[in-house]
Length: 337
Image (cartoon, rainbow, N blue to C red; front, side, top):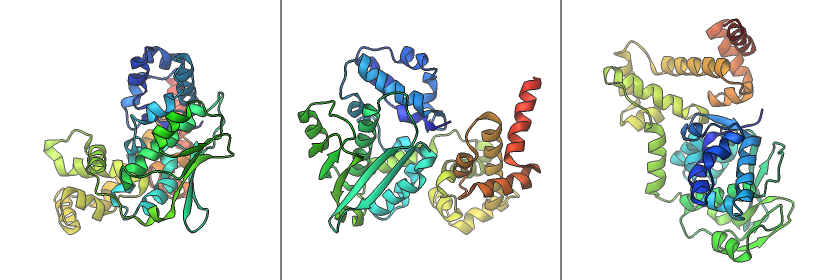
């Protein structure tokens, strides 16, 4: 099943209700739990999310629904992928990282950056999954969020050279110009926009908002005073796993410690950083395999593995059997209960 993080609907309930709709009823009609939208680790069926956005726009007679929803979202909806921006030196480095790890947010989506010539780069957004309904609002939501992310990385002055839509314009020309700040081309063979290639080499803007969002994502968990260091390290490792940012240097820096100091303190708890990372991976793997129907390749990515074969080897070391066998065993136990 094609999935997407529940954060893709961040702001959806508030926007629908403000426009006079009933967001809870709208979500439940599609068998979506409204409570999951606030869960940064939850996933929803991608087709249902698309249908929720497109149906709400139609029922509320709001042609710019996708654009309005994008104004309530930003890099934070990407979850662990947002951490890339914290460590990237340039805009190009951040964007390439987003493209590489977007599957952690949703394997149903892809973004590409193509150099058209020495002066122009093209950003393309592609929905890989099939959809039961038209996706115009979803496309415009994605472009709106991409624009907000670029403005966060570069600065509010960023403007695309041109915006391309793979569908007929659904809002007025004035609305598109107001939102994107450039000319629009509808009925194109791709969804995306062009911008100046020089922006890729630009050093990231010193954006306090981005720092706060990333910090909030990393710190959004209760701490245990009795074992605070272990709790903090395990939490940071869990949050950082999908993008591979689990090196001891990265975690130690977040805690304001030297890597050797962190390792020494963990030794006082009779463990090592490497052991903690392995324990977190094992716990997360077991949870994903027993409590979700996420594809094995997606689980491997969420655990920070570059290949599914790494997950298979780890499962045999942890559980003495393959990932599929662990999942089957869990299903058999549920059937007995």
